[in-house]
Picture 1 (cartoon, rainbow, N blue to C red):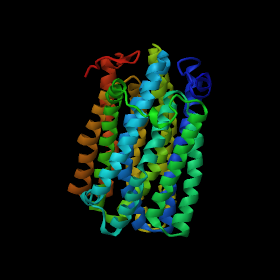
Picture 2: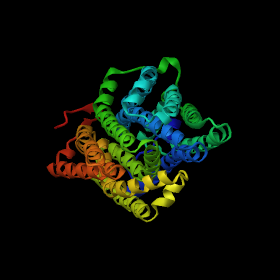
Picture 3: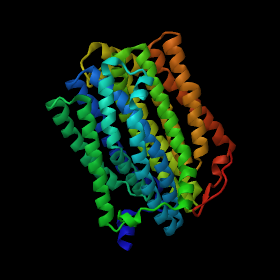
Picture 4: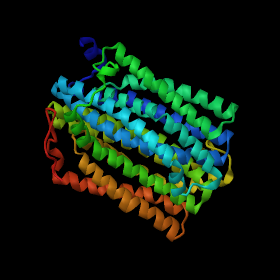
Length: 462
């Protein structure tokens, strides 16, 4: 057990705040950038070797997979916050029980989602108006990623556990190996074998499986408290309740946000067809890359906030949020400037179709105003999630997604008839709304209320 404590756990409630945050966030940032890169690699390689129909298929199938993965990541966040607060409070019993519970629960969840979605994937693709030209490619991509869902979910769960314990280095190593594997397999399956969207999906699943097994091997060799033997798979009801208390709102938040982007995909399919779908897919891949530094910093703030609140150090947690926000603003605003100056360079990397590039430029230039507000929203939400205030982050997300993003996209894109430029307005509109609501919530002071004390929940004020 001592070996496990030394190698895997990192106490983030002690030492210089800036140093701790940077040292924790950099591997986290690097792993997210690497993961984003190999997601972009799918689109780059498919776009250059398979054409717009396959690009559209990867985009649409990937959107559905992304929703399912985000739901699981939301539940994982409940475990991450609990693990962080248990580490800060020195609660080893709670730490062991919540780890076993989250691993066991997510395996069952992955298998259930796979079975259900394999039956309903066709109706879902038709519901979001998948273009006829890319329907078969979307179906193939989605089928493969659903079959491999246990690996995709498994890696995210194990990484969340390690990061909750303050360990961000090992997930970076594992995802880097997975990235190289994914790119090589993309080139083999897509460029050489011409398996198109099917090949891209297969490369993704294999690389995620590799990273999951590497994570398991590392944990077992370092005396991790969960040994992955059959007898260890247990669900503790008290920990399950806590995971759902903290994680379910984040799970729903991720689902609502992802669904809003799925509706956006459907709107794009209505106003522009397969070329517009490919363009928005390319922009989406770039955006995922541009947002990764801020997303990584947000998650780092959550982990560090959880440990510090668990240790009773609220002011240190606040300082963490401030430093992380300043960093995120610098990075994301730089991406905004690059997008405004060089949009064609970005789109040309994803394919040479002139119509796709032109659609992508008009969409990206407007949507990128979202970059100006995202760092504040992500970092403050990371702080609130780390403190267990996930009910508010759910409310804010639903407000921005349901009342702003989707209606604005539909009204300006379809009703008024501005096409992709109208659809692009949805992102900035949702971001502004979310930021206003967040500022109002901070002014109330309710965020200072302790939601978890020594592993025991207290009622959160609405």
